[in-house]
Amino acid sequence: MMNPLRCLAVLALASVLLYGSNAQAAEDMGVFAGIHPGEVLEYSLGWGPFNVGEGVLSVQPDVEVDGIPCHHLCLTANSNSFADAFYKVRNEYHSYVDKDKGRVIRYRIQQHEGRTQRDAEVRFDWENLTATYQQDGKPPRDPVALIGETWDPLSVVFRFRSFNAGENETVVIPTTDGKKLFAMEISVVRPTETKVPAGTYSTILVRPDTKDMKGVFEKSKNSKINMWYTTDAFRYPVLIKSKVIVGSFRAELKNARRIETTATE
Image 1 (cartoon, rainbow, N blue to C red):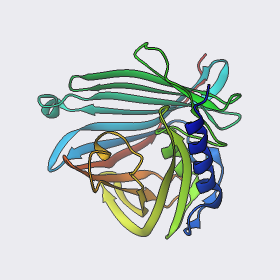
Image 2: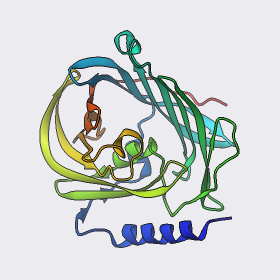
Image 3: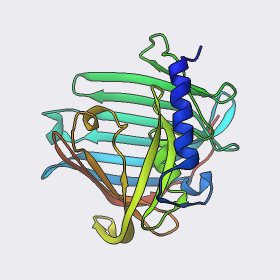
Image 4: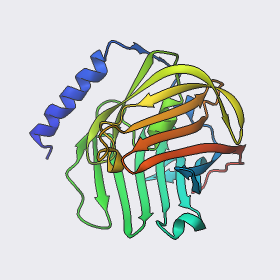
């Protein structure tokens, strides 16, 4: 049964999404405009002055989830041998998006950070408009209410890429991690040129609001994330920088490629 307080929270979020802020809204080119089958984006990961690992953002071959053909979005983050000596990271995030209706069906986290291990899954029930979080085989948490179009923390990255956003425009995307529903607000700061190992790109600098982000972001008083997306049709995220209580993190695109994709059963 849905908690009445959660219902009130959903109504409050809906009002934000319907009436928004005073910022200009960006042009939406459709859910699938940000998903490019076979895409593989490889990143070098840095913490302060050190190279600490590699991340890969990709669109894997299609799969079926509960009999539904889905796009398989994937993010992996692995520390290198240098960082392993201090804090070993082997993380995977998977999002499955209905190819027909353009909505998330499942979100999965396989997290191994230092001594922390977590295997969690969020199931999206669009008939009842709920998302349910379950971790490590424990009983599932109370469901979170969904509104209209709601995304998970991985697929929201691809969803943002489907907007043709310009300077001073803002994109607001309903997002849930299975524990709470929030409005992910992403503001475009300005156009710029960005140089990374993969090349030099014409980009836009965007700044997601971190107030609803968990982990180190909620522990940091003045946390900030800056992201640079290319202005071409692919809208690659080529550079990510964040400043939190434990230091500065960066992800720089070092290679963008395509793989052949074939649907799997």
